View 1 (cartoon, rainbow, N blue to C red):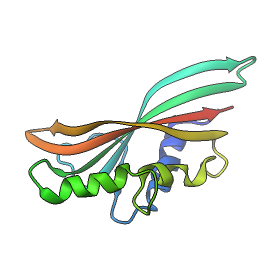
View 2: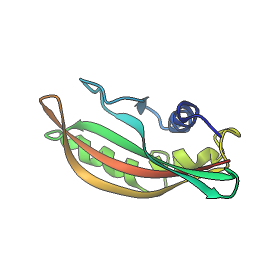
View 3: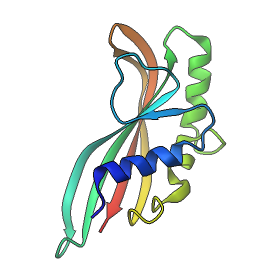
Length: 135
């Protein structure tokens, strides 16, 4: 089975294809947008017999800027698109085995497009649900 850190690193590597988007594995105290925060959200074990398949669910939160910035929404729209050079979905799915670390992955949803608070600042962000299958 793949280690959580290896999966997170693979997702971060795929996201590095988006120009200007940084990645982090923890929520920073003072985010420097645009940034993608990659965190495991749940694991479903033993989907097949004899530890044949686990499903890891990751949450990728993309913070684009302060909520008051006009450009933030335009940039977030580009990240949320299903196609294009800034598409988070396309970037994450660009190498669906994460160079052989896992069996497969999919970005299944974008949700919670809106504001979030980190520290004392309000940012514009969106969350992406990533499902990872590993043996």
